[in-house]
Length: 232
Image (cartoon, rainbow, N blue to C red; front, side, top):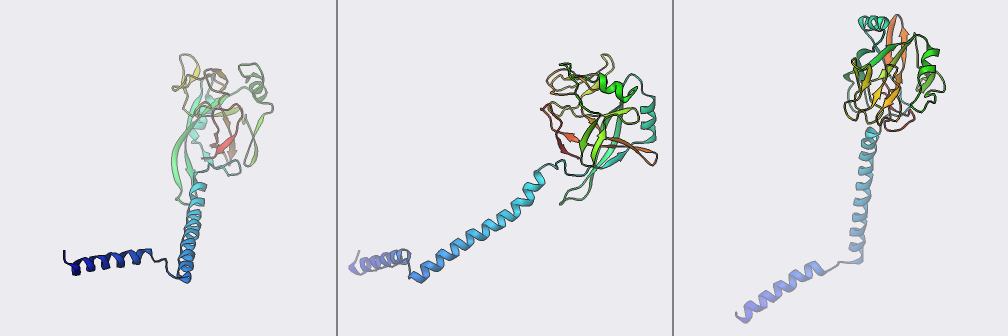
């Protein structure tokens, strides 16, 4: 290679090297540092602004949320009134809405049983250890407290308090049986066998303008106490 070519190559290399290595003046360095820090701060603010509603939408509505009453059909209520030795499956439409989606409707169901009296039900509903499962005939919810027995009826959640499966009534053995892990409950919802930590959960029932209504409540599973997770 000629000396002229070698000189040109070395000059080009020196030129490229100096373009990347030169840190610039103190003012330029300060400006670049400020822009980098500003970009990080703005990105963090935007990320936080997006994270808050996203995380909030994932957190279940607690006991401060408001439940919705769902009406039963007249036919279902008639079946409940004539029920004797087996529960009645009561189906209804559950409507829910959050801050970011339009109102949604989904089908749900509960189990209804007819009892002789509230006192008899409260006395008979015992845990396997022989201690009363309820210390008083009401349970707390968003609107205050609701009666476990109302109009001589008890509404039982269809969700197993173990891990959230759906126990079904087995007429052959007169028990609710969970198909997932084998928990069993009697007609009143008392826990008889299996890993469930408590009996089936009673739900609110009321009569409003001649129409029977139920409120859907989802309780936390896998614990002995009743802790409301959501109303949807």
